[in-house]
Image (cartoon, rainbow, N blue to C red; front, side, top):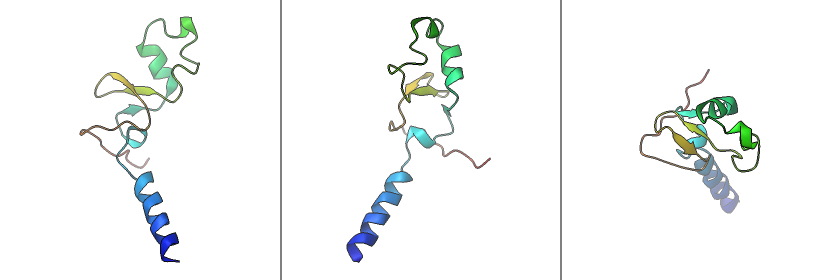
Length: 79
């Protein structure tokens, strides 16, 4: 049973890791990305696999993937 508890703790730590997916600077709305990159939707990239789960980081003004990390991470505040 101890192995199972350790696995659960590891999964929780992984889920709570400071990654871009849970950062307050990640613009979760896909449309903000499409509006920030002129011409993106003209190539259908705004809706395609080339963007996938990437979103705009409002702090760094660049695309970030959910698993990316940086030293400026701030957790999303509860709404």
